[in-house]
Length: 176
Image (tube, rainbow, N blue to C red; front, side, top):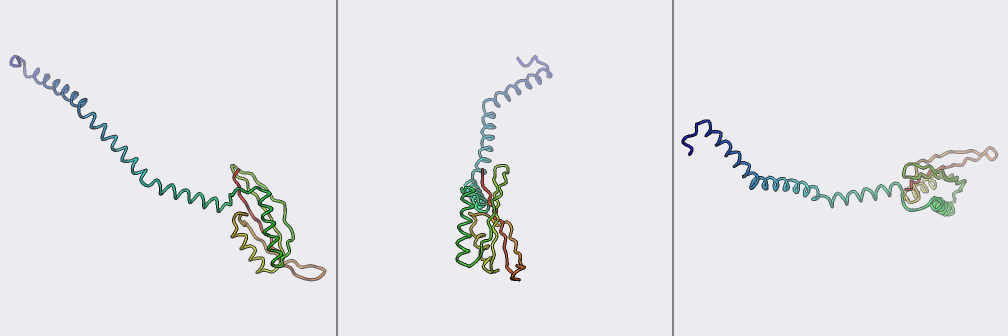
């Protein structure tokens, strides 16, 4: 049957049979193997990502808690914050013989997603006692963060007495 075919026709027939054999082999064996290999590669990449996920999640939660603590984003309202500052300041002033000159009305600034509250306290007394009060307020981050402190030595023109005044700017950032 193949004896009467020319060399050129035999080569063409061989080429066609090879192509059909390659297509049948691909569809029956190689296709499944290639698909499984691709699935293996994607699963391996996912496993590498998931492997460190619990550590990454706990690290991110810790960073979020630290940020909230540093910003003072506890659930206290504006009135509660001012009242807490007033109570803390008044009790410290009574215990340490410091004069509470003034607590100004809080200034509220609204930004995207946050409300910034600024409380200003003016105290009068000895340097070490004022410094100790500032330290206590910095330690208590629930009341806010001390953004600035100003010391001024004022002289009373009538009595010629010098008094040290301290102005504290306490900043509190709340989530809306």
